[in-house]
Structure formats: C-alpha cells, structure tokens
Length: 466
Image (cartoon, rainbow, N blue to C red; front, side, top):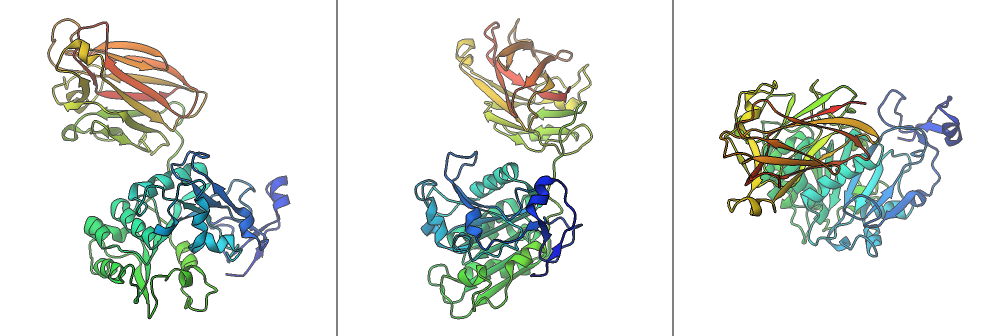
C-alpha cells in the first residue's frame, strides 16, 4: 500500500504543477487515478456542502483526494451513511457528521491520503435511518456532480446507516454499487425483501457480539442466509464478529491504525471490486434517435423502443436507435390519469403495432370544461445545452367521439400544437426545439379548441439534429 511510483511525464501545465505520482502499487493502465503527494492535512480537503447549496436533496461533507483538481481522471466513490445520532437539518447541524466513522478520521487528519476515493457523507434530515431512495438519489447526484468511475461506487454505513445501506441493497442490488461494508446494522428486513438477489454485490459485514443496541443477529442472520443461496451464489460475502465488542464496532473497522482492527483492510477490499454490470451511458449523438412507447406493460415494444408503462413512470439512460444506453431520461413528473389499450395498432408512419395499441391518458368524465383542468408533464433530461432536437409525437384512440372529441394539445417551450387522435393512424406532430439547458418539459392537456374530455400520448421520438 505504501509503494510509490513516480510518473515522469505530464499531460498539461496544470498537471505538471500537481507533481503526479502513483500510489498503492497500481499501474498507469489501471482505472484508478494518479494521486499527488500527501500533505498530512486531509481535513483541508474536507468541505461542508449545506442543504440548498448543491443540487443534492441532502447536505453533505465532501472529501476530494489529492490531485482531484488535476486533469480529467475519474475517481472511485465511497458513500458513507452515518448513524442515528448524526441526523440533522443538513445545514447548521451538518458538523454532527464529523462525530464518527470516516468523516471523523478525515476531520482529525487521520485519513490515509494514499486512498483514491472521493468520499461523500450525506446527512439524513428525515428522522430514522437514511432511506433506500435517499441513498439511491444521492449516488445518482454524486455521479453527475463529480468525476466518478461508475464501475467503482462503494457504500458503507454504521449502525442506523448500516441499516439504511442494507435496505438500499435489498431494493437496488447492483444497479449502482460495486461493494458494501455495513457495520453494526440489521439486514434481516433487507434480506426478506431482496433475498438472494443481494448476492450480486460483494458484502463484508462487521458487528460486535456484545452489541446491546443492534443485536449481532442483524448481521449473522442476513449473511448466513446469503451464504446459503445458490441462485445467485455469493460473489464475495463474509462477516467479522468482534468478540466482546459492543455497539461501536466501526472505530476499529474504519481506522486501520487502531490496535483492534485485526488487519481487516476494507479499503483495499473495496478497490479489489468493480461492478461490470453497471450501465455506462454514452452521449446522445447527432443523427441518432430515441423511441419511447407510453402505455401498459401488456403491450410493451421491443428495443430500441423504451417503454414507460405506468402513469408516473420513468426511463433513465434511454436506449438510442443503436440500442446504446444514453444520458437521456424521460420522467412523468405530473402524472397521467390512466392507461387505455383501445388505440389503433396499425398505422402508416412505421411504428410497431404495439405502439399504437396503448396510450397514457388524462381528462375528466365530467366533460370538456372539467377536462381542461387536467394536465400531465413528461420531463426530458440529460440533453446537451444549445443543441437542436426534433420531437415527434403520436397518439391514437379508436372511435371518432364526434368532431374534435379527442383533440390533444402538446406544449413545449411555450409553443403548442394540437393533434386529433380519434382513429388516428397517419398523423403525428413535430417540434423543432433548441435546448437551452439539460432539461425540457413536454406538457400534455386537452385542447381548449376542441370538445375533448380526454388527451393522450402514445409514442415519442426524439432526434438530435445538431
């Protein structure tokens, strides 16, 4: 771990100033970053990020390893989840995070600067243990805000934070993380939820056998259950039960200089694991298209179509027409009222029959005026600013319903177009839009120019023009 290899060439003037060296014995061909010489003051790189100062839904502490400001390397991410006693408002109480675990080591300048992790420690402001969804959303934020290697995201937590980490794993398995170290937590509920699927992530769990706050069975139970699984079998699952140790089993686990750590190097163990199954999106390129089918799960459409099958659904890292995962996502942020399967499957614009069968709909049984109060919004995210996109929209509903009985209005960037979807097999509408940011909102509503009680969306095709 202490072997140092000097790098004798430099990529830029900025890099030269950083005096790059390689740490931990990793070669330049590895996907771990080159670091700069340690200063002995990791606390100087530990920064409070209060709630509201970033796009994260939580306040957090940020540690950036030496050399992060040099070049464009990607870094492994370690997310630390604190215990119940460190809950706070994410602002004036954010320093409570520094009381235990990895943040305490960094703040006391006892952190090993040879370690290449970006360390982020979010504070839970909701009461109880940090929720599974909070951890998931924070990891997504971290990957977008920092230069993170998505195959090297690691999760650890102590006590209530370990319970939250276990619950996260039970819900999300290997969709984001490469390995997990829960300390003094209870994973029995997580195993009841996630079962053997949790074996897709390496787990190294720690607990004291004299813990009177969270019984040691909170670790022995789920670990023994996972070790008994065969489908899938464990990747790298084990536990350390410290004899005679109470609830604080994290001090000797996180601090490798502690005389009671017994040489259990969780950091080297973390770095030995990568998540090869994580999706690494590519840029949505000029000339490529993304197809989205809105409707019920019974009539989903094969790739490269992206299916949104619920009235408040989402599709992240949408496939392009080459079936590559992109940075673009589609989220119904203002929900539709329901799904119908009474569209016209055959059409003249080349969409598969399954696209025309289902639609998401909104409106009111109480007539046109009541329907005008309803709306739905599909947010398109992950776009490139100052880039032009073409958006084609299609919907169909069998039956004429009299005149403009199903006239739907689509609004984008303040511009609107109407489409009569009754028995529609040939017509679509197209917007040409310049993205001023990374997101645009498509509003769907009943058109005030018709007599409709309902509005529909069946398909969307997004094409990047330039």
